[in-house]
Image (cartoon, rainbow over all chains, first blue to last red; front, side):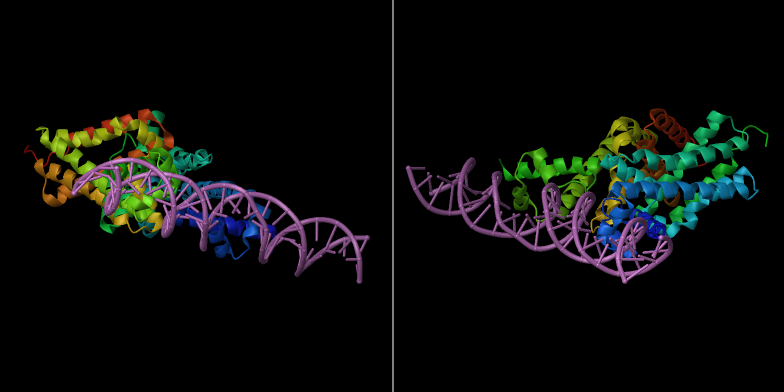
Amino acid sequence: MAATDTRAQIVEAADQLFYERGFEHTSFADIAAEVQISRGNFYYHFRSKDEILDAVIRQRLENTQAMLDGWEAEGAGPVERITSFIQILIVNQTKIMAFGCPVGTLTSELAKLGHPSQAGATGLFSLFRHWLARQFALMGHKPGDADQLALHLLARSQGVATLASALRDKAFVEAEVQEMCTWLSAQTPGRLQ
Amino acid sequence: MAATDTRAQIVEAADQLFYERGFEHTSFADIAAEVQISRGNFYYHFRSKDEILDAVIRQRLENTQAMLDGWEAEGAGPVERITSFIQILIVNQTKIMAFGCPVGTLTSELAKLGHPSQAGATGLFSLFRHWLARQFALMGHKPGDADQLALHLLARSQGVATLASALRDKAFVEAEVQEMCTWLSAQTPGRLQ
DNA sequence: TCAAGATTTGGACAATTGTCCTACAGCGCC
DNA sequence: GGCGCTGTAGGACAATTGTCCAAATCTTGA
């Protein structure tokens, strides 16, 4: 098999397992079983487990950026785009109710471990933050306000994800999403737009 | 030393370490170093690590209940009590910015581990949920509405805690707390109260 | 004071962890 | 066919994990 294929498979399996079991609770043996390679083979592609984590974070950054770019290319307005963001909670409902938000839980875990890649994980939040801020700016909000609105929405979706995985209550998630959409449509600055 | 003292010290140290480092990343050696006892001594007081976790959760349940009872005994109205809840984010700001919310992060970790004590940790949320719901009911909301408001507020504070530990931004926390208080004062059902 | 019980110690244990190393298989090129 | 390179296998390794146990120590009551 080509080296890049194996590498990609490792990153893919690690990405999923880090999400479902947590970074620390995922061992090389787990990933090896998933990809069906020997444990020793990792070290041809990576120098350490931390390096796999870095690759996973890099991939998540790319995928997230691609998703946001995709929403932006769809031609709809900022309100519709922000709605797409909110709807993640519905689209990924099953996984979120089982494992929480992949960004939030990874960040929390790395914070407790005092892990060097914390900054990388926080970068995932920054991607959403700045993208959301731009959408709010397009709605007519001043830059500072737009950023605050972005953080507010990010926090609310994080909270819903956390409670979703604790309570596993579908109705709760749907009610909160509904409320966020209502809130969004009320966020028109002054009378313009 | 009396057995109960040692036991209490173990639970106390475990409580703190589980919060700061996570349950799985805290070893017996870590707790032993903190309490200054030998590793083998644990098994006189507990049958397993999971049993320590259970004791920690039980203690947290008791402490939380005591805190809520305390707020209720202060004689102030429901709005002031709910404000006390919101203010946790300010009072415990330093720890929350470093390690997130003790309830939310523990729940997330146990969910990923598929740990049997998940239900116990979720019970911590229930405590807050029902207490908050009662306060909202005292404000004049119907039971169903009160519960939904309780969950909403719980979710928002969870979100703020998650983002606080990711961004470590004091101003963000304070702005969100401010906004939650504003939101709270707008939650009067109809014109009564 | 001494025996009995409660508490603690320190090490043994099997399993698992991340890491590393050497040997080997498959491949294209001379 | 033999050489060199890329990629893989599988085991060795030291450290750490949770668990368990027998011996030592402390405490208490008669």
